[in-house]
Length: 216
Image (cartoon, rainbow, N blue to C red; front, side, top):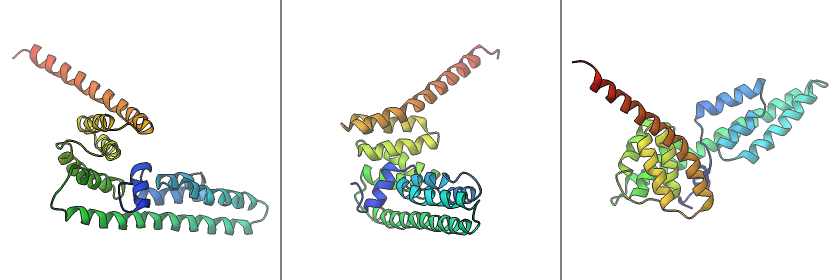
C-alpha cells in the first residue's frame, strides 16, 4: 500500500477514475436506458461488485414493473440509493486526497514519489489535467520512483498528449518492477504511446523534408 488510506490507494492504482459530472451523467442516462451503466460508474470508482448490487435489483424491479407498476417505484428507489452512494464514495475520495495533497505540500524534502503521488491524485480524483501535468513534469526530471505510481503517471501524461514524458514514465516503471501483472499493464499502456511517438516523428521528418526542398 502506497498511501495511508486503503480505499484511496485502491482507487488510485486500480480504478479508471471518473469526474463528478461524468458520474452523474451515467446515472441520469441509466435512469431511462442502459441500466448496466450503474456497474460501469461504480467500476470507474473501483467498486464494480457494488455496482452489480444496485444494477441487478434495479433491472429486475424495472422489468417486473411492466406487469405491476408499483415495482417501478422500488426500482427508482434502488437507482437513487446507488446514485447517492456513488457520489458519497467520490466525495470521500476527494476529501482524503485533499488532505494527502496538503500533507505532501508541507514536506520540506520533496521526493520523486511525492511528486508522482500528487500528480496522479490531481488527475485521478479531481480531473485537474493541466495541474497534474505540471507537477508530473517536475517528477520526470528526477530519477527513480515507485513503479505503480510511474505507471499511473504515464497514463496521466498520455491523456495530456505528453507522449515523450509518458513513455519515459512507462519505461522507468518497467525497469523497476518484477510484478508480472504490472509489467503486462505497462506493456499494454506503452504500445499506443510508442505508436503516437512514431507517427509524430514521421510527421516531423516529412515537414523537415518539405522545408529543405522548398524554394526560397
